[in-house]
Image (tube, rainbow, N blue to C red; front, side, top):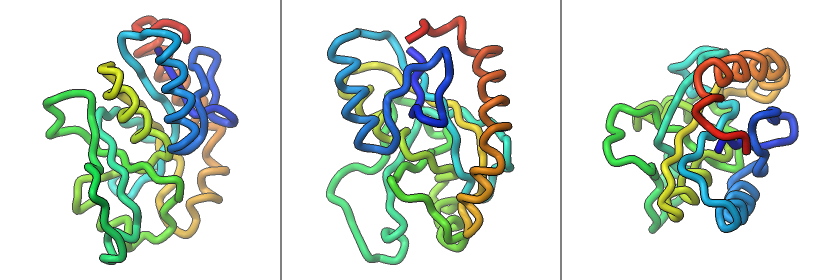
Length: 181
């Protein structure tokens, strides 16, 4: 099953599940309770912490949920903050998810030191829910912006072209492997 966030990130071949960590988790859980699927492919946009360029397409099977305050020693969590539905993922790009977009490029450098290279609001929820249903899940992301003070402006400026490129990539590489919805 191919899924996406929805709203301005919708595709004719992907089922929209909600924007952000919470809506994605709720809606994907409801979907999987009603329809059993073999695997999930999440597609969407991402911000680069600096290692990937605008319009790069990155595939991943690993997500984290780390807040910026972690790097300033202003927070901690007792829960595991990295998830995957696969066992051997040591060379995977880690995608960080938060309901907040990073706009401080100095903090972005700290993510890179932890091998966390991109951020997308929903991917951590996708993997957590898929793992709880024992379903393999992965993601394909296109970079729309860097995580700096211009993040939102650049996202808006690059979004339309990014969506076009991502749709072409998915159709060429994945659409026949996954069922529509």
